[in-house]
Length: 256
Image 1 (tube, rainbow, N blue to C red):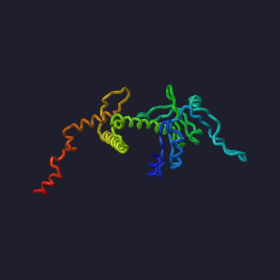
Image 2 (cartoon, one colour; image 1 turned 90 degrees about the vertical axis):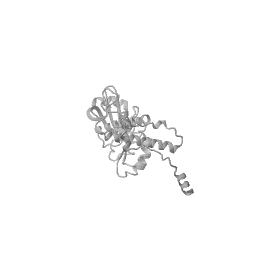
Image 3 (cartoon, rainbow, N blue to C red; image 1 turned 180 degrees about the horizontal axis):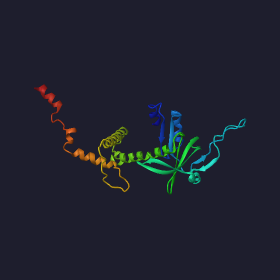
Image 4 (cartoon, one colour; image 1 turned 135 degrees about the horizontal axis):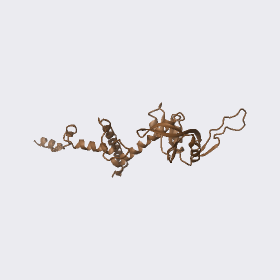
C-alpha cells in the first residue's frame, strides 16, 4: 500500500509512523527497495533490541574490510538506565497540550534494519519508552510529536469500528465488505467535516476529569438532533417512491 501511495508523490519524502510490531525489516526492506531514500520509518523500539555504536572511521592502510557495526552498547533497557541521568527537558505538543518531557537522543546502529537510526529515550515518572527513526535529520521534538500523533489514528479505528459500525458487517462477499468499510469511512469523514464547521465546540456529554475537548459521540448526537428537526427536510427532502409504475403507464397508453 505504501509503495502504491508513493507512486503519486514521487518527489515528496514519506515518513511512516508505526508501532513496534511493524518497526522491523519486514516493512522496511521491501518498501525501501521500491521507493529508495525518500522513505523513512519512525517506530517504537522494543526493550530487548540490541544496539551498537557506529563503526569507527577506517584508518589509512588498514587491512581487512570495513566494519558494519561498532561496539555493542546493550539492549534498549540497559541503555535507558545509563542515559537517564543525561536526559534533558523538551517542550512538546502532545494530545493537544504543551507538555514538558525528559528525553535523550543518540544515533546508533540497529541490526534489525542494518543501518544507523536515531533513538530517543523518553522518560516519564515511573516508565520510559524508546523511539527510533531512520530519518537522522528529525529533531527530538519532532520525533516525540509525530509518534504521539499516532494515537489519533488508534482513536479513529475505535470510532470507525464501534461508533460507525464497520465491524458489524453482515456481508460475506469480499467486494461487499470493502464497500461497507468505504461507506463507514466516508461517514466518519463527513462527521468530522461537520464538526469542523461548527461555530462553537459541542458540550461533552460524558464528563471526564482533565478533558475539556468533545468526543466523536457528541458530534453524532448533534447531527442526529439536526436530522430530526422539521427544517432538515428543506435541505434533504424525504424520499418518496412514485405510486405510478412507469412500465404499466406505457402499456396503458399503448392500449388506449
